Structures are given as structure tokens and as C-alpha cells.
Image (cartoon, rainbow, N blue to C red; front, side, top):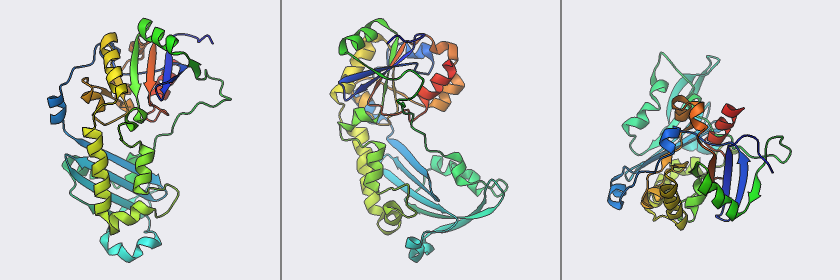
Length: 314
């Protein structure tokens, strides 16, 4: 298949099969087309171990979890009313009122476990501002995965050989883009696996997580702490080591959706994907220096990065 223009996206699935697609990438191209920074094991060990995740649009629910150097904070919120399964423990919730987009007042039931850090408190600053009451869900969204439809008129993925992939890496300006799949081999959960381990069910009014955070929060704290410790302390996989060598050989960057330190433990610093930041800082013309993005362990365009790049090229 002949592709118009120049940009390609390559997906590597389980390290064996490769797919090619038109378009791809972002960040400052001048920064992308240089070798990743080298980092030592001692430097990685000194890096702050922090991460937070928010689940929202779960009917009338919102969950927030954070990990900060061993300290875990959990929070659940219900808008409007508590589910009947939690009415017996409603005294454990803090009740506040907010105004929605239609200026209608709604009750917010909040339950917290653990100590909230200063930067986490900033997330709720607008909620506590009586002169600017806002729906707490306004600041959050669930990314819509980008999948390729068989009936799509756009260029579809195409299997390519390892030889063709090697030729692309050798002759083109490429960057590497990694997702959760590359770290799963090291025992770091993907987001769907994490949701399952916590009992988060998006279609239920009251799932297992909502019950556990009130009745047995220590269990959630233990599971979340183990997950984060694994992400920050697990050794790199063969794939992480291979990508580090390729990036140094090609003098190009490794972009990642992952928060874990596995790529750093392979000896190089990865560039954390943040589409909103790239949109503000990167000129479209700068991206034209990049010929291909090699995606490893990436099942969908969670951060909207590839989708945004395609729009800029249309």
C-alpha cells in the first residue's frame, strides 16, 4: 500500500507484529530529534514517587486515588444522592452543595481516607469557592479511545515485516511511543486491570470500590500501594532496554503514556505524554521533521495525541 505524504504510525503488538498508518506525533521536534538523557540507577532511586488517578463520569460517581512516596489518599464522591447500599454509613460522608451548569443546586457526598497533599487540595479549590460554585466533574473527562474501523475511509493499519520496520528505523526520522502493554510483562497493571482489581464498574450505581473505600479502605490502600511500588521499583523489561539502545543509536526521544520508571531503569529518560501541553507549545511545522512514530504496547490513543496530530495534518 502506498501512503500519501510522509508520516507514518507503526504499532508493535507483543513485540512481533507491526502495523503502519498515515500520520503521527508531537512535542518540540528539535527536542525530539536528539538522544534521550542518560540517567543512573541512583538518580532514578531519588526521583519522587508520585502518581494520581481519577475515575469520573461513572454515572453519578467520581473516584480519586493518589500515591506520594508511600502515602496513599483515597476519595469518593457522589452527586445528587447516595446509593441505597451506602445509606447505612451516610454519616461518614461530608455533604456540600454546588451549582451545575444550569445553576441548579446539587448535593455532593464526599468520603476521604488518608491525608490529602497540597497539590491535591488545589484540585478542589474551585469547589470550595462560594463565589464560583462548579460541578466537580467539569474538570475531568474520560478519554475516548481511538480505534480503526474496517469501514473507515482513512488509511488503515497494515502489517509490515520486521525487515521493513528495521529499514524505517534506519532511514527515517522516528520517535518511540510506549503504552501500558510494554510494562505489563513486568507486572505493572494496565488501567483496565487496575480497575478490575479495585472493583470499579462504570455501569453500576454502587460498585465494589464504593463499598470498600468506606468499609475496608485499608484493603484498597494496600492494593494501590503495591501497584505503585511495582511501577516505581520494578526492573526494566527486555523491550525497555532494546528501545533505550535504539533511541540512543537514532538520537531520538521516547514518548510514553506510562508513569512508571521502567524506561528510566533501562538507563534513559522518557518524555511523558501530555497532549494539552504539546498543543500549547508545539508548532505544526515543527512536527513535519518526524517521519514515523513507532508505538509499542499502545492499544489505543488514550491521550488523544495521535488523534490531535491527524487533525493538524488534515
